[in-house]
Amino acid sequence: MIYRKLPAGVQDVLPRECRILTDIKERLQKKFTVSGYRPVLSAALEYYDTYSKIRNAVPQEHLFKLSDTDGNLIVLRPDMTLSISRIAATKLGETRTRLCYFADKWDLKSAGGITSREIYQAGVECLGEEGAFSDAQAIAFAIECLKETGLKDFVVDIGHVGYFKGVTRACGLDEDRAEELRGYINAKDSLNAERLLSGSGAKKSAAAVVGALPSLFGGAEVLGRAYALTEDELARSAVLHLKEVNELLCRMGYETYICFDLGTVKKLSYYSGVIFSGLVKELGAPVMSGGRYDNLADDFGKHIPAVGFAMGLKRILVALERQGSLPAEEDVPVIVCGEGSEELGYREFLGRTARGERVRLSDLTGEEGAKRERAAGHAVIYVTGEEK
Amino acid sequence: MIYFALAKGRLAEESAKLLGRCGVDVSVLSQDTRKLVLKSADGAFGFFLVKPSDVPIYVESGVADLGIVGKDTLLEENRELYELLDLGFGQCRMCLAGYPERKDVLTSPNLRVATKYVNTARRLFEGRGEEAEIIPLHGSIELAPVTGLSDVIFDVVQTGSTLKANGLVVLEEVFTHITARLVANKVSLKLNKEILPLVEKIGENL
Image 1: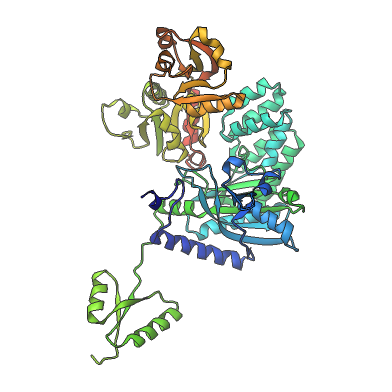
Image 2: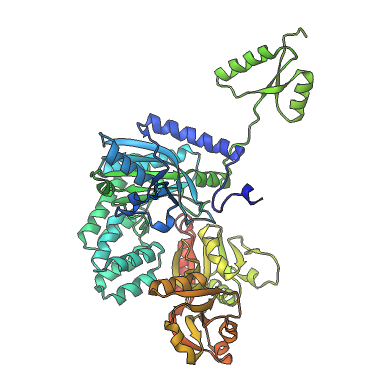
């Protein structure tokens, strides 16, 4: 009996849901292709060591592990950006390229609530690119893609890891303390952040900036506030970069889609510059997430600055449903052949599908078959050679 | 419209008082009703009264925009949300407690710890590199050492009178500043423009 069930944290996608998911995928696929992104598929299985030997590894409690026949430990792909970075650094001659993918990734730990252990993503990676215009383009493309999925009223929240790095290095924290602080800042928990800083003997002026981090979010005006708060060079250059990105995005016509948060510090440590996520009111978690990761490929043997993002397609589906934007299920008309006119019906079927019409050829024939199809609620196209 | 998830029990009353001071119409909260979703008369606020340990998941998922819940629950649930304000009330400590004469058991291997804060206890002992057998319970934690089910307990202590009545003492104060906190959903805080002004108001009215 138990073998009919699924393990925790994974779901089957049933036809009605899958139809819409496939529609979204097809639209995004087209968008990616016409915008110059080349598709890539990475292997779902990789060596555990690939991930344990690099600096920006996914923590091992998040990895689905299996033992290979030779005893080597292998994992189910935990992150697409890592895989693409590996492919680009080790297999592509030309590393200045734009790639896109549709793929599952697996997370052993997340289960329950709005997180799943099997996460279906659509994403793009712009490899070998640097600068504010590259960042602005990635964000603009993310906005266009979210529009393409049919989402309404979303915003893209933009931050920069350099700001956090800059203001915390001024506090002189060791790695463990900095990581603990990152957790507090990410939770906008200024109380514990202050407690940690006062306990570690950080300078008052430096600690004050960190204390302000959780409130540094809102429109483009926070950039001015953030700049004035710190004298750290790294932090200031992060703000200046964001200003440039903001200006570009405004000139490109995306002013109403963006906001800023300098207190976002993502868990995945490979991000090195701009980070951003797509938010909709109807869903308590981001539907899109991305950022710049200039040093990730270094661990795979090549320096490839890059920026990219991924969309969680099932989260988008949930958000669309909550926004009331899911299309109604459409009935596919059915061709029923008259007795002895099977070849005529089949030709009709071929003709219509060649023209791109959605139609189904029934296995039932004759008046009786047509009756049964109508009774099941389908529009019937009756094809017969007989004179009426 | 702002939805609140409030922890039923000792925090709910204080929470209602605080929100009342901030101009939130909380009269609906004092009604004797079995309804689970309560809406203020002006339609500006909705309230879910839930078990304290359920507040974080309601807020993380965005079903509730804001929540009021104890820091002990936040530590235990460890959810993705914003912890915005220390509300000051519901003050207590999280302690290891047991018999005074068996104090040395704290350092013996495989200490048996009874608690309803299973995750917090596990992290605590893992962080110290100590091995402990966590015994999950849902209530009357003090009974565990008294009956020999566990060596010690890990629980919140407010006045310590239950401990005292059962001959137990606090062996170690692990977290001293446990209070009610105002938490927010990560997306709501940014997209629902009514939330930030309310949070500021709550901060001023503490």
